Amino acid sequence: MSNIIKKFSVLFVLLFLAGCGGSSALMKPSQDQSIKPANKKTAQIVFMRTSFVAGAINAELFEIANGKVKFIGSIPMGSKIVHKTTPGKKVYMAYGMAADFMIADVRAGKTYYSIVRPNWGTGGFAPTPVRTDGTSDYNTSIPDFKEWVSGTELIEPIPEDAKKWFAKEKNNIMATYKEYWRRFNTKNPNEKAERTLTPRDGM
Image (cartoon, rainbow, N blue to C red; front, top):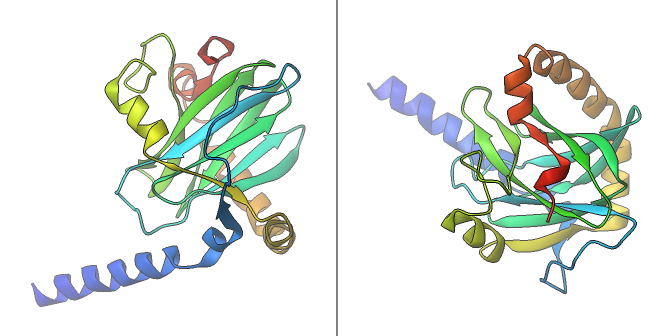
């Protein structure tokens, strides 16, 4: 029994250290904590993270479009990021101890929401669509939604620090993307649909 306790203690320390510093140091609180409406030329996705599960692990967010990877930011527990993007089809990757994905098809002038939740199967984080039509457990009609929005701090990257970090880590990030995207593509159509943010999910 003591050996099991020791192993769990070591694991806890490693997870705690993984969350201290690192990519979370690339972020700062936004001076304006309000979520502004999207402008007529761009779409925006609000990524939120609220779960205490795996709270000590950094979750980094990336957009993949036209074969290019863009660093969105590092999202610690209790925070949110407003990501502005061009309309169209994109892929979003969250990376903690493993990578997971959300597909998106977004429209200009719309605001979309995604909850970045722990994935029990991989040890990573799953960026999950928040529906506006109530067809999933994660939707804008449940009481939790208002708490996700109001109870999280709006943060943003520190531009120069984020740029340097991404340049240093880009090769590793690309390798991670290729490996886990291959795994994601083994999902069936219904599973992929659950992870797809659709035009009608915009507000």
